[in-house]
Length: 383
Ligand SMILES: *Cc1c(COP(=O)(O)O)cnc(C)c1O
Image (cartoon, rainbow, N blue to C red):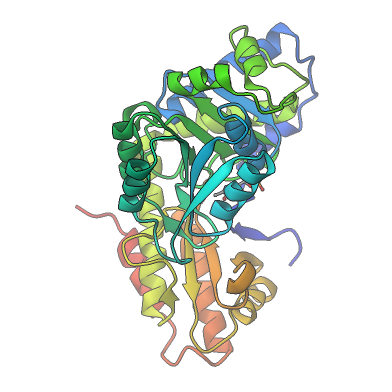
């Protein structure tokens, strides 16, 4: 059926009608009073979402623009940094750092395993000249959540170094209190937890990060955050922003505020649990190590069949788009995105579709219903 596609991928994620309506408005002048009001409002709400008193700067660009901005605004040529790498996005941080001539030490974990926070502590102890530690909170490629709070804590105790966090698929899904955890830089993007189309990214810097900024000598112009900081103090932007995406952002942040942070986190937790329980009930293995499943993405590794066959079947038969595995995981896993504008109904539907597909493909080996039953149990109100 046309026009019925349901996005169950970790970005772009589904967009509510109220947010879509922002996109259909006439653009207005970005130096107008009306647009200033939108900028002011979105800025306040972004601070609320990040749980910070610092400025949260909005960039017209995808999440990678925020990643690049985080690096080039806080570091200098030849600086030593540590990158956590347990998936595709950890790898991307390494690439960004190397593109700017940083001296990168990599702390690895197998894909599917979480980063070991103690290895960060050890590395910081061994080298007092580490300028920054970079961690992907929710590793989208594997569905693993890393212990950002503990790693940030280690970095804070060490003293000299910044903690830069990729929260693209954790912000707006689980608790990421920037100021409380002492995170120096948070990067995120609109098409993930924000219930928005792609096109905007966000970066917030702590006082320490701004101090580092005053020493940073890496080349920058469009992504020079000093100009974003200067203009946000006047509720404005340095260049022409994606005006309609700001309207969408205003609507999405209002919706998030109406739901409330605690409720948003609970919903993602419930969907994670329901999805995990359902996959186990239909004898599919979870790819992420037990206890380290991301609140936004569940990666599933079917044992005796190419994961792409299941993914294609679900797409063709049910118009539900699941994500595949990346690089060496292609065909080994599929990923269910449950991030942003996702309801209990979406979870039930996706699980029902996967379970039915397995049955049709002749690989369920049990009556249909156990997956749905397990999910329904997790979704039911608990007292
Ligand atoms: C999506 C994503 C990004 C940003 O990717 P873009 O395609 O540039 O928006 C960065 N980190 C993680 C963990 C992501 O999931």
